[in-house]
Image 1 (cartoon, rainbow, N blue to C red):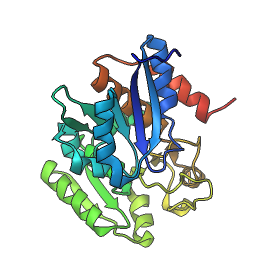
Image 2: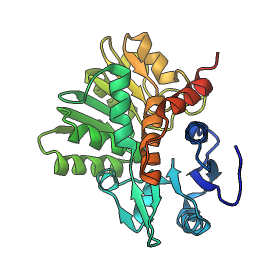
Image 3: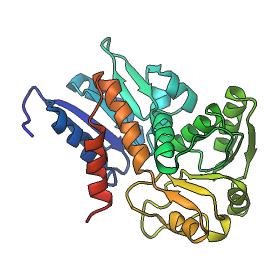
Image 4: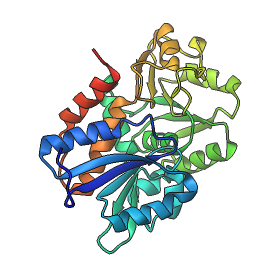
Length: 288
C-alpha cells in the first residue's frame, strides 16, 4: 500500500478499540479496488468525540465508523441524521458533507438483516424475538426487527430507561408488533429467551474470553436461533451454551461485514469488494 499526501484516510473510533476488525476488512477492499486510501483505528473517549470528528473533517478524512460507546453520543452531536439514524437513534457511520456539516447514519440494521439471511436463511417476518441489550446496536436491531415484520419482540437491558425508550419507539413505528419487557434482572431474561424463536445477544458481555455468559444453556431450546453481535471469536460463551441446548448459532461477523460495506457505499458512492472483505475477516477470526 502506497501512502502519500493524496491518500484519503478513513477510520473507526471506539473506546476501547483494540478488538476492532474494521481496518482489516476495509483495507483489503481498498487494495482490491486499487483506491488511494487507508482505513485506520483510533481510541477516542466519548467526551472528545465531537471535537475529534470536527478535526477529522478538517483533516480530509473521507468517512468514519463508530463503535461502542460512541454511537449514542454521535447521535446527539451530529448536524444531520439520515433516516436510518433517526430510526435507531444511534450513529455508526459518519459522512462529511460538502458544506462542512456532519451527517450520521446507522448501517447496523442493514448489516443485521443481511447477516441473518446468510446465517439462517430466513427473514424476520412473523418471528418472536428476544433482544438482550438495548444499547446502540441492540436498539438498532430491535427496531429493525419491528419494521421488518417480527410478530413479537421482548427487550431487556440493565437500564430501565433504555428498555422504555426502545419499547416506545417500536410502538410508534410498528404498532402492530407486540412488544414486551423482560426487565433489568437476569431472572426474567432466561424465561423470555426460551420462548423466542430468535435470540439476539447485543451486549458487550463476551468481548473478553473471561466473561461469564448472561444466559446459560437452560435459557435455550432445540430449534431456536441465537445471533450474537460479538464478532471477534468463532464462538462466544453464550453461543456455546445455546448450542448445548440444540439451538443454531451465529456470531456477528456477517453483520460487521455488511454494515461496513454499506458504510463504504455511503462514503464513496461505489460498492466495495465484499468478498475480499469477507475473506479478510474469516482469515482473522477462523485462522487455519
